[in-house]
Image (cartoon, rainbow over all chains, first blue to last red):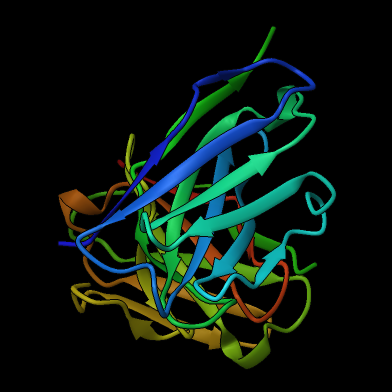
Length: 119
Length: 108
């Protein structure tokens, strides 16, 4: 049964970099688009961006200057790096698989990981 | 960016009643690429509908979706106890993908 699992620090200091990894188990990272989504009380669900197994990406315009999504096909993992974080980046971060297209529904989700930005 | 506005914010119903949830877009959603999700506390959202009216895998037929352009509806024909949750709409007609703010379906 295919599963996604997020991992990374739960606490990040303001102005530092938030780094998360999503591990795909029970299936291959190939031939799919993979996305990051976050959920905060203030902004609800927010799409951050996607990466294709070939390496092509697209990002939300509001985060484009601070966000990088990458992947490691040999480890069946993809990652998120968000620079210069502030308290507004405090949220539950989910990794997810797109159903088929770059802009699509998300038919497989990780359980989510809470990230707090605080000194 | 397409803004999705969901109404009502909270819907209070008894099991067995019909639920009607609305999602209105600030501009027309390309190809009716509108999805609905259900989220329970401590869980990730689960897809219910896509393409406005197509049920996702494993979703019971008491859930149905309709609408086009800027106005979309999720209907639960007879609410079951396990349906009490928060429901979100999502448009994926282009970048950026956006979500509505959610409708909470609570037990009356």
